Image (cartoon, rainbow, N blue to C red; front, side, top):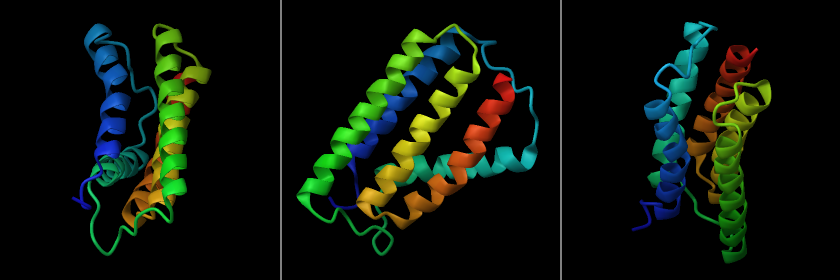
Length: 144
């Protein structure tokens, strides 16, 4: 099943867990103070691309890992980044700060871009290039 990336599915699942917990426990926890519809649309398009193409590999746009060593680096780096992401969520759960906003937006952005590069997924790279700057900008503007 070369079209399905089970590791990517697990990574997406783990990244969304703290967000779901936060949404349930802090219903008013996120207030969008900076409204820029264009940036929000770009972020959402990038998010759907990143989530989708972390999991689904479209033939002709996905070329796989160069070597088994590249795949191992992909796993080690992503597991480390996602563990750090979860740790920051735990430590900063109730603290609104620029650090938390930037850390929790930069880390998944790196995961998506790194995953796209390592797996040679053109659509994931494109999605991450839309998602990362928009997500980081929105997070920063809302944290100030």
